[in-house]
Image (cartoon, rainbow, N blue to C red; front, side, top):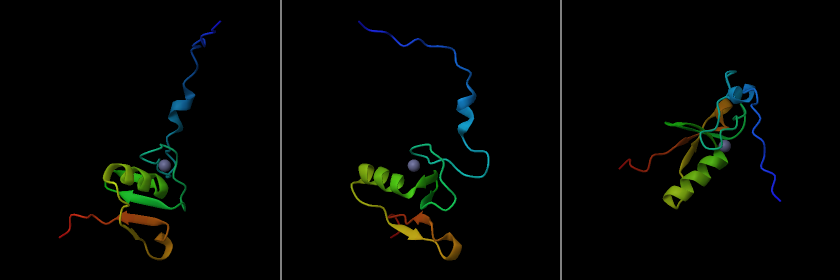
Length: 85
Ligand SMILES: [Zn+2]
């Protein structure tokens, strides 16, 4: 026999987990990107570096070219657009 899960009307306090404290949420997995985690700053938002690479690879079939930041921004990467020729 199957017990369907009862949909209890939960209080939706969970849905406001999206950061308002300065830490952005990853554009792919929607988890917060820790301040010093390796991350990619793209025009469409911020991604975990691993998330971005996985997404990029699944879309373009190759790894993205990322440029690492300097100094205190070494955990930040920017996409090197391939269309610059
Ligand atoms: Zn992510």
